[in-house]
Image (cartoon, rainbow, N blue to C red; front, side, top):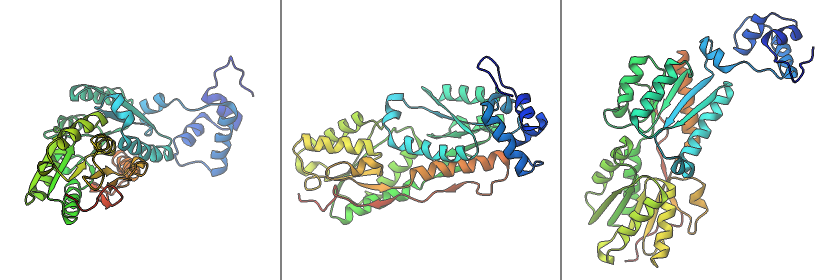
Length: 344
């Protein structure tokens, strides 16, 4: 039997071509036991020849398995498209979803209220089998939402922010402390941090850790931003416009794109990196190795982080996972050309 362009191939057509029942086709595509490998292969071959694939929505409605995972992000599309962290994180998530023939449903939202509505709509409409929650805040309302709905989730955030939800996180406090201690060991006594959005939980954790680690320094500054390059440039400019005795000799950034922007601002102001000011990035994307000088960074495997979050979510959904809440490896310092002992 050969499907014509005008025909709509159905599961019945696949079953007929493979010489099996419709139920056998369903077992094969839902990865259920009860079929020999030869029969399973014959069904998949018939489906390929006919150009047929199961309807994901119908399969999700039937509750047979997980076909779609949700991820809502409260960032402007322009900012998200330039943010290496999210691109690497989503790539890691997708690498695991592909192993499960699963798709990612990504939605950009404007605020928390919109995300709550989206998550509830997805779950009640049976569009997703589970969700990845990011950018936690203090007293985050999504904790109660997930518990009330029975929505399977993995929270990307420290347990102090995520309530009783299964969470995967990085130890930001330890990483910030290491960054400050490294710069202090180089001889820096005036250190600044260009941070992310103040309302975000991981920003607050980094802010508190920086305050504690920098407590004995001669000078310490922190500036909150929206993670964008423009905001990073403005913050850097404001920090470096003071006269030499009153400005930082080293700056730590909360992401790579702001660090790259800061490097451009230093050049614009006639300052040499690292002779006049040392710069330390966060995440260590490819951007850090494309600049001159190359950027020192707090480096971690963001792709692996995303993959671990996805694996943990499948464990939550199926009840077969044993990992529970756990941290991923802490970011580690990777020194390059943008940090050195101060010359001033």
